[in-house]
Amino acid sequence: MGKPHPMALRERVAGFVDEGNSNREASRHFRVSPKFVNDLMKLRAVTGSLEPRRQGHGPGGGKLADHAGFVRERLQANGELTLDELCVELEGRGVTVHRSNVARLLHRLGLSHKKRRFKPANSSEPTSGTRANTGPNGASPSSTRL
Image (cartoon, rainbow, N blue to C red; front, top):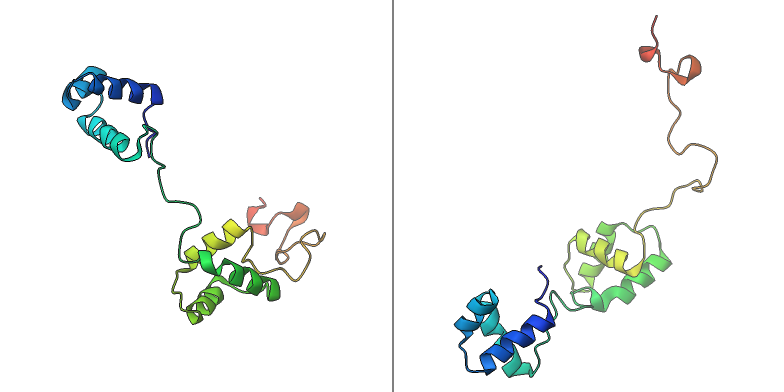
């Protein structure tokens, strides 16, 4: 979304219209769109202020907002749940959501849905399997030149 026009411009446009000029004259004079001037004058009539309205959605919305506590409790009780399992449990509570919505909720809550590894992350052993057929100096036979 674009940024709202500065307050100084908003005040000057409203003052120009208050002097008796039309909205179209104000839009030509200040080189803004006629819709901006019309919307600005409507905003002042409704709210009494020239402050721009908040853009985007309000915080805390969405169908999962009421179920955040439930999701947090389930993950604390059993941290090995996948996104699909959480979707099934939420569907049992009457909420049908996609797994991406659950992932965004977990991110907002600062939680992770990833399963934990059997070995600790700071282990000195590699997490992947050993490489097969490594030649001298760790190179694979296909990459060594004869």
